[in-house]
Image (cartoon, rainbow, N blue to C red; front, side, top):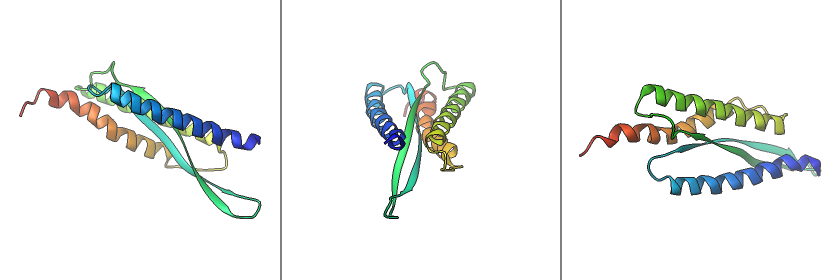
Length: 132
């Protein structure tokens, strides 16, 4: 029973995180004040009958960017630094919960996906002054 605790905890955190992320996205339509960072991986387990099953697990974190001037390269760099630190922390927590799983791409994937959203936050102040 204790072995299932991390999966339950992760699933609960993920469900809570998705709900909060959607609420934050709706409440913060413009400008973007947070960027969601998600570390995810697939865990393969074998049941006593030797049937392999796969479970997706993930953790989410939020990076605040409302205090940054994203129109500057310094602000954009700081946002990327915060995203990378959050991704490393989340992936380390996944590593601790699932120590037999090695995933070298966890941080890279989490940063890449979060930076796609961060680009919207970074580009918004720069294009706000450009009127068609």
